[in-house]
Amino acid sequence: MFDLISILKEDKIISLLNLLIQEQEFLELNEVLQENFNIFQLLDIETKEVHYSKVLSKFLDPLGNHGLGDQFLKLLLKTLIRDPSRHTKFNDLAIEYIDIDCSSMDDVFVNVEQTILSKRRIDIFIQINFERETWIIVIENKLFAKESPDQTTDYARELAKKYPEHKYKKICIYLTPNGDHPVSNEFIPCSWEEIYQIITTLLKSPDLREAVRMFLTHFSNSIKVFIVDNPKLDELCEKLFNKYPEVLDFLLEKYAKFKSSPVTERIKFLESQLKKLYQKDWEFFMGYNWINFFKKDWKELQDRYSWVEKKTQYFSLVTFQLQITDKNDLRLYFYSYGYERDSMRRAFKGNFIDDVEKTHSMYNQYLNTNLNTNNMFHYIIAHEQDQKDDIIILKLLQDELGKILKEYEPILEKNIRELTKVDTSHW
Image 1 (tube, rainbow, N blue to C red):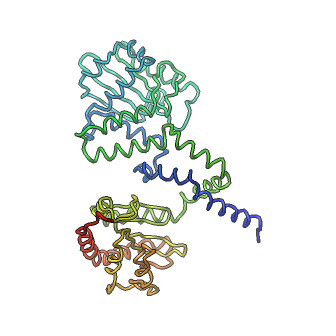
Image 2: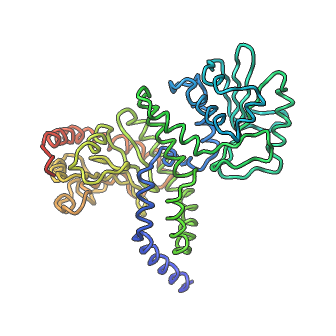
Image 3: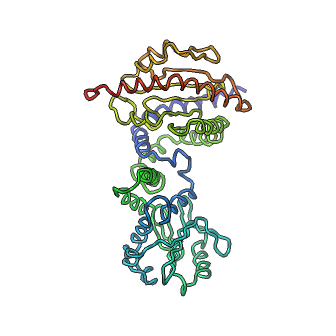
């Protein structure tokens, strides 16, 4: 049935959306989020409380393979004991700052979702065994939910039964984005802002392993954007929410459908298979209906040279993209960002690989001569394939993509080497 009202509403949404993306607040918001890109966004876990608890527990474990030893754990305890409003609890336990600073915390057990007497689970549980005493540290992590009725009171009561005061010194921490106070006085409030500051301190260490530094940076970026109060983000979002409520309601509804769409699920599957084929030297980024992948060396060059005009985490100096189109084609595209990309285009002349569908030549004359486009390469791997054909597609992907990479990787490498010899300081 022809629905004029729906059509008019969609036209209005499109017009408003076009205005939204031109708003200065939108551009600033996008810039902030791009600057703070993190692996938590990529893995879609930036709003999942349990993952933050797991990551935090790993760094609080002195025996973890991060190489930090007990630094993170000690910094957390020192942060709490230095604050006058929280120092009383440590006084009650006869724990002084020097006890934390000078103790060797190398006999430690750390666990997440630790079960206590009533089968309730504590988010993070830490047991530190010293020669003459044992400390129990529990952390209740509340990111996006409030405390349920008497939750911390019940926890405190059950912890007292399981770990009596004459045997254990218990430090109970209630961790929230803003350091909210729990119902039970047995729990010490702590904020994710304080966790963020601890990570900032650790990142200043020159002895930090590069892999650990990178992960901590991603972790801190995620905390900064998605957890702690960020006045700039809040202000930008509020302005956009107030000005474009219809558009944002529409986008939220569409986003929910997009997250569970068959195309997205299929792209996830194809990405997992690609990683098995090209795991060692390649990086992968996934969107709704596409996967970008490129060699790590190409990404490093992109970040290093000034003649690369578009620097973003999703693209490299040269980038392959697999895409599922509206017609269910599986297509391969090739992109290059740089003032010298016309030399890259020439790499695709005279190729010997056949197009599966014969509908597009491997070397597209328009795309390869039009300086306004970065798309230099268009190849249909599979035409109008549905999900039941994934086994066929995987074979095509392995065979056809393998041929393409085998032919063009050395050509691209040669071109890149030539470009990096050029003096680009005047560009």
